[in-house]
Image (cartoon, rainbow, N blue to C red; front, top):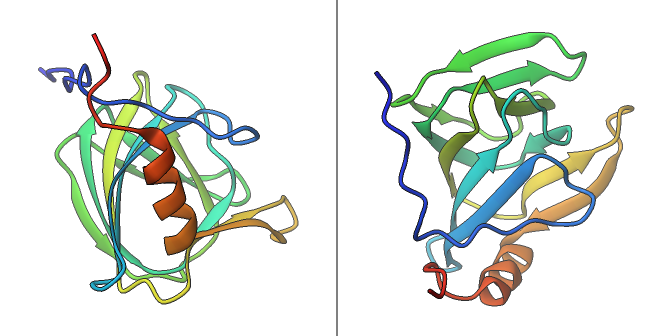
Length: 148
């Protein structure tokens, strides 16, 4: 039996044009080149096509993380509790939740440029997120705990 992750103290954020994904930037450490983010992907949906540009660790806290190749083929399913360390510059893909919203912690390491490249269907870069962008998002999101 899977127990839902208590997200009552998390302030979820969204970005216009990026559907089915909510985020909370936990930390941006420029000196150590680390960006830590909580993501919530909607159930039975896919987020934007993208590529991870740096090494990262993923821990699934709720649901199952489904990873799809750029052509839509299901590549991998990571159940709750999964811990996976992945090198950057892998293949372009989408991700999403299974039958419930998935919540996963992403720790992006050794960031020297972009953390993510957002891609169009032809794999052209349409947006980029690096340390400056995540630092600005973290400052704009306010405190982690929602006001009562």
